[in-house]
Image 1 (cartoon, helix red, strand yellow):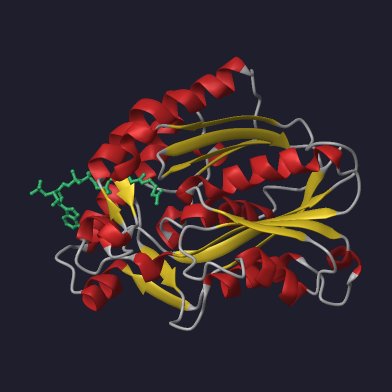
Image 2 (cartoon, protein in one colour; image 1 turned 120 degrees about the horizontal axis):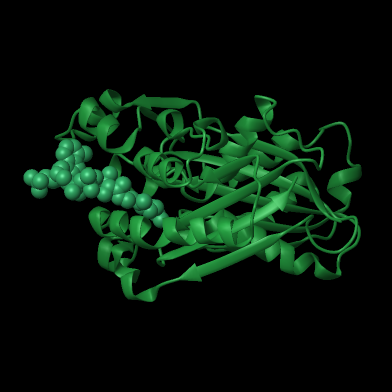
Length: 313
Ligand code: ACO
């Protein structure tokens, strides 16, 4: 079966504590409010000239051996999930392909905001149904700092920039023990908006989204785990608010070691949140990428959209 064999990530150099952010954006807020309501202590922001594609390329290069071209030559598909890329074409995926010197990869970008990475993995799984050799690169990359509204303190404190990547090796049809359930609810589509009407800056009705996550996303995740009788090593959730992580741990009676979190250090990375956290677990030797561990991924965000995936890695 196909399997995720490598992970990589990239965080920009520019680290901002809550107090740094408050000073830079002149926000009427406090470190205490932000930490208590969200669990966030700091985030990383890309430089002005660092585009989403640069972040995506760095995450991809992080998982590849620069001296060995044998993998890049065999990358058949590149999928990049992002909601913050300001360049419609060429796609971020095409720019990654160019930077890596891939020979003939099918490249595409997708946007389901903070659900982006689980959507990209779902797509990779469907596309791999007739692929028995080669590799697929799945990347989540975001420069959220460029769509934040300096005047909206309820949203601009939440996000950071970064990118994370998975490399899938195709050795048979489909990902190992893959199951998924993807959802959306258009009724709340204007709860999170980046459009001409918002000057292409992020606007979010935070309380509305909070209630949606509590009432829909978390019950759907619990149902997914229980219905499929999943015995998991790790539950890796989109890092939107530490309060969600704590709530899920409580509802599932899960040890916090099984429900890792990095929102304190990197904030909400939207589509990059899940792969960056997964790669951190690889670096900590908690995820072994040897085909023996079961993980559940849960993404949610604008759309409103959400999705749960379980697979063996
Ligand atoms: N500092 C100080 N006070 C603030 C700040 C701030 N940064 N932001 C808001 N407040 C104030 C509000 O004005 C309000 O004051 P009031 O009572 O006088 O009116 C008070 O704090 C409470 O505001 P709430 O919005 O009710 O605060 P809440 O506890 O809901 O926390 C938050 C806000 C953190 C945004 C929370 O609602 C949340 O996490 N929502 C979900 C976000 C999410 O999951 N998004 C999905 C992914 S994002 C994507 O897809 C792009």
